[in-house]
Image 1: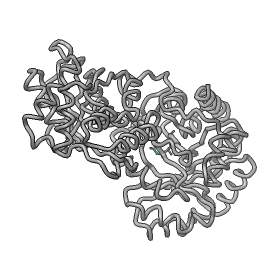
Image 2: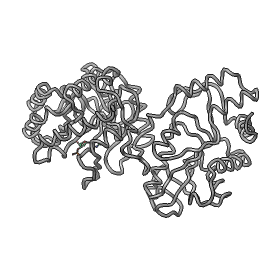
Image 3: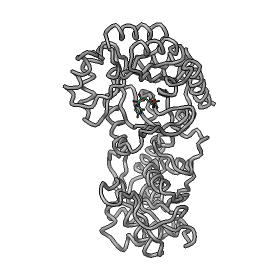
Length: 481
Ligand SMILES: O=c1ccn([C@@H]2O[C@H](COP(=O)(O)O)[C@@H](O)[C@H]2O)c(=O)[nH]1
């Protein structure tokens, strides 16, 4: 027997087509036999207040526990409003995008630093939307340790939120919904089985993004670490260049990429020759080299062979396909002729990949998407980052990974390379933000750490490079424990 209140609620959700059965493509791209669309609830104000009351009872609210409630935009906003009005708890509104005029606030409403807020959400799958809201509130000094959701899809959101110190309360679970509807004779038992199978095979515990770092995160936890050896990673990826990179990383015991951002070719060649033994990648910005010549790239390629590393030109192509194809092949740099890897901004759309791929694929080159950036206030976040992952998935034959600040996917075909790394965290004067090698590898899930000035501006670049190599590699070893 079920709880009559909840049975009634499930029956209503089914009757108003908030619960649908069929074959549905989810935001994640997965096909689901069940789809829950709680947006329709705004058309049933009485039901909406009942839902809000049930959610409040489930979290055992109590006035003193929370100074605020905040709905995850957008579907949960009316439900949060009902809770706020009925329980007389001030509401906060989290903006998805900052305004470019007026106050530029990300959180609307009056609050004090240290206030506690309850997050209200309609459905939780991986927990990432809740975490995005928590992060915005945390940035303003507001504390969050509890969230209430009407329906938990049981795909890992609860445990992922727990990893961030957030207790998820749910009124309903997906299993409960299908079992109740079956008990009521509204659906066949095969649908219950299909749903249960879907839940088991589509858990998101590890893939929770991302740049999301809440104030409750224990930085020592291996939340985003990959936990697979380079040998295993090499075996499970497809692209020959990725296999080669992992094999170099294993043989040379290094996950360090040197960003050799110097402007004289001799200085570059000299530092690369001395630091080469400790790195798996050398990353260039050839357009800053004042005396660029074909002989310079020939020497660089010789050093890549001598020290067994991969050459990555950090060109960040960002134009239409035809133009980037010309930029890749022509001009004085002729990048396609010597760079194993280049990167592109996803902003122009998939044509930017196609333009590079047209030449690069047959040469065995690879491409990285700049899915996230290390610089303060950058716009490569949220839906943009998710779209970048989708683009990469559509070009697995050529895209070998991401420039990013967090683990974006579990797909072994994608290598995560993280710039903005120094032995001690902090910022530079122009918006660069640094994390430590440990933080990048263990917490952010980086496969490769990219270090520039930390090494090239050190008084002893060689011994400093060794330090980064050891720090990065030890962090990797810790993820295997
Ligand atoms: O988000 C990004 C993307 C690229 N970079 C590049 O990495 C190096 C970092 O240099 P540091 O001296 O270690 O700051 C540099 O070439 C950037 O263009 C990045 O920093 N952030």
